Length: 408
Image (cartoon, rainbow, N blue to C red):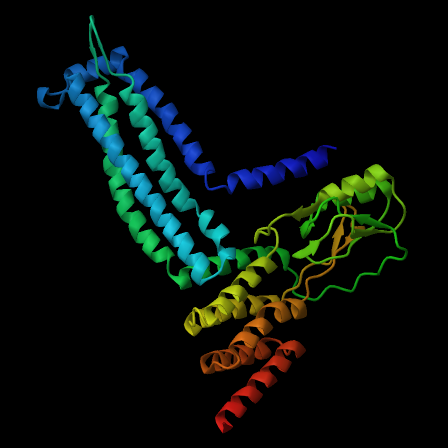
């Protein structure tokens, strides 16, 4: 039960942290706490002594002047935030229309953009809270001068941050930058998943037809290894996954095979340990990153876009990933602490990945000479790294097509 709760909490945590609103909201609350601390210090005895020691030309003693300063800063920062959000939306719209809407998650989840927007929102929250503390009363005028000076410094910092943000957005809109980000994210997850330098031995297939069905429809992205191994140890059985990550599964269909019968409550625990989601993530399944790069290439080769240069950049990124995968392999079993095999994993083979990513791009771009020459160059290098049959077959097809075009 605790393992299932942990899996559920991990899923909710992942969704919340990767939401576009998480960091802006968190930073906004942080600035609210800072404003409370600075204003409390401003009205403390130490704060009053500091304000009394300031030169006359730097002191702020007029309530209307303080309100005007804070109001002007607040309205300006709101305009700055709206403009920054608009720039982000333009980048997302252009990326979705010209590349692939699959890359939106990587752009929306960009931490720098979220932190910048959070600082803007936090400064606005700070200024509004500060504005509410200025009072005209019989005993005198309470003006948080030190906090107002801090607000001015924050505003100057926000202006310089906005200048850098413009530069960052203009760089982010470049196709090669987006492709490079997808490549880096995919490579990182691939290196963690495919860490073996030799192909592992083929696992023994389980006998029998005892299976666990999916408790919901969605895309299978793997399983929580510790939970599944713990269940297998408890009931002294072996599980075997029936699908590779990235496979869409309907509710009620088999997902896991079991070596012997287990109780119904154990089957429910196994189903909850599986990661079946409505959408895919590179962090859960590196094959999704390969598909993103393939879709970018195919979209670039479509008649509406007609941009073979972007397709070539995507093919180069794919070739670098396949150059790593062709000599590194994922482990096809999960073991317990004693080294016993408890889960047999359906491997995402090189042939399947290659056929589902490179071959569709070739189908789209086989008539383009730029794509022909680039694929010939990349496939030749992959063959030198490892003499793979699937790569060799496509290389022969590319050679044949190039020769036919020369004779035509």
